[in-house]
Amino acid sequence: MNNHNKVDQELISRLREHPHKDPRPQFVEELRNQLERHESKPGGMWNGHLRAVLSICASILIVLVLISSQFTKEQNAVENPATNTTSEEDELKTLLSSNEVYQPIYENLVEKTGWQKQSESVISFLESARTGDEEQLHKIIKQKDKENIQQSIVFFQQITLDELKIQSIQKNHDSYAIEFLFSLKDSTHQIVAPFRLFESGEVGFNHSFQLVDGTSEEFKLTEEEANVYKKFQEDQDVVHLKDLSPISIAKLYVQSSMDGDSVTEYMLYTTRTQYVQWTLKTHLEQAKNVNPNPEAIRRAFNGLGNGVFIKRNENEGSIIYEHEGRPMSFQMVKDENGIWKVAFMPIQ
Image (cartoon, rainbow, N blue to C red):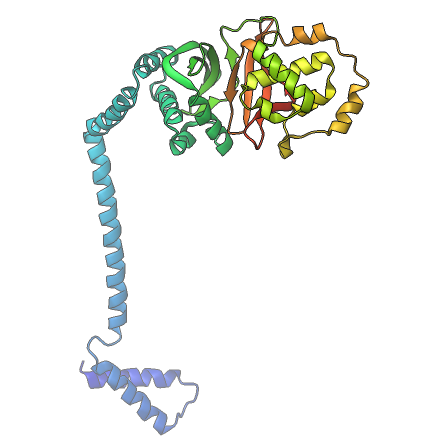
């Protein structure tokens, strides 16, 4: 069928669909011209359909290529598992070789827990905390808040890994309670720190410590502490405290309680605003109703002088000591002038 006949047939079909039985001659001529122009174009009305089909085919081809690529990767992983395993083994070797104590600890953990990958997380935690790698710690630690991560780093700045040992490992539902024995850098004391290893590979660390070799020795000021205490009683000038350790300042506080010196006692509390809980006036009013028993107070703080001070962060710390076989914690706060003072309600 030639193009002329096609136009005639299309024209007759369009006229039948027209709402008027006798359309204007001008309309008929314009319609014929329109059909002739359309028919004369290469491909005519089929061009649009062809483009749509080609576009769909191209999309299908792209999807097939992506699927094939992914399948190839997965197939290679199945056929060559040694490549992935070798990479993981190399990472573990590098981690364990970063400190000589890591290898025996790792082997002990795997033996006691049966968890190889999770045990690797413990070593990674120790190394990340030691090097101050906050990003890596965030991936491993159970309590992911920034404060807890920073406390972990601060703690590891105060200990040495030279004599790091596992004190105990105990199964508890979906986790293991692990007690590590740490040595302090500036002390001959050792402390036990509890960790928890979860099946997910996360490591919990709650910063609760116990002094291993502490003794409940009788509370008593040293000669230096007694001299500073006498000067501070006279004028409450904190300059007298600047060369004392947090433990010594805590002992001055206890001595002032034994002496019933409420003013000196209050002036040894922190002045850092967000930690202040009551005023000197309130303190003195409450003291009127208290009859201190010096010997009872002394016995209550036996062992404090033989404790160790551990910072939690830049402005907070605890004196860890043993009292009659029980672990105790005495809270301290660093004032804006850099001097450590006693926290309100320090015993926890």
